[in-house]
Amino acid sequence: MMLLPRQALLALLLSTLPLNTSVISEPLLKERPLKAWREELSLKKGEAPWESIPWLPTFSQGILVAGEKQKPLLLWVMNGHPLGCT
Image (cartoon, one colour):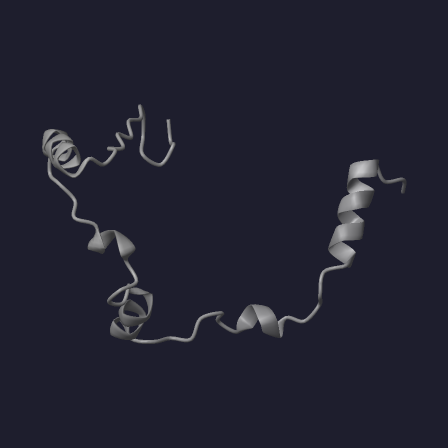
């Protein structure tokens, strides 16, 4: 039987897969209580640098404070979904 180039490539790739099925049968993550996962994945104190920035609720307040301190003000404006999913 003659294989087409795509089929031959697929057969070659599949033949290189490991035959060790113990990797598949064992769970990748050990079961742990939800509290332990939450503590490990949560940010610790001091790990969130944006918490130390004195954010202002409105842009107009930012203009006033920037003028008083003679500092520049960054206005970041975008159109669309914040994650780029448009």
